[in-house]
Amino acid sequence: MFKKRKTSLEKISKELINKGTETCILKIRLLGISKIEDHFIYECIYIDEKILKKVPVVAKNVHSVVNILSPYVNKGKSEQWTAFQIGSENAVASRMK
Image 1 (spheres, rainbow, N blue to C red):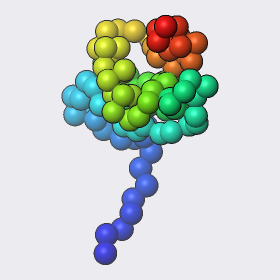
Image 2: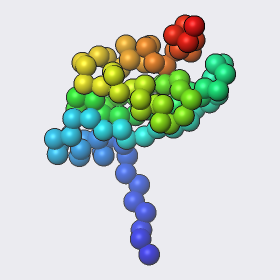
Image 3: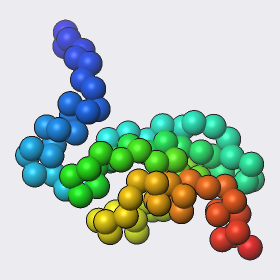
């Protein structure tokens, strides 16, 4: 049998960065149900330009999380700026109108 090894995301991210990885999604986790109909709130942990970032994303599904996050990767934007743009229910609701 294989033995499970628990490795922290910080350790994994450091290993990936040391190997030259610029961008990589490490984890997408469902946090809750959004006030916006048919949407959920996800937490996305990823490496962007060799920096570990964690942002909330309001989306319909995991596939949408990746599509929503894609335009904000490798742009030099801060974690806070990205979180405001894609993690705010109010911002998502205003874009839907």
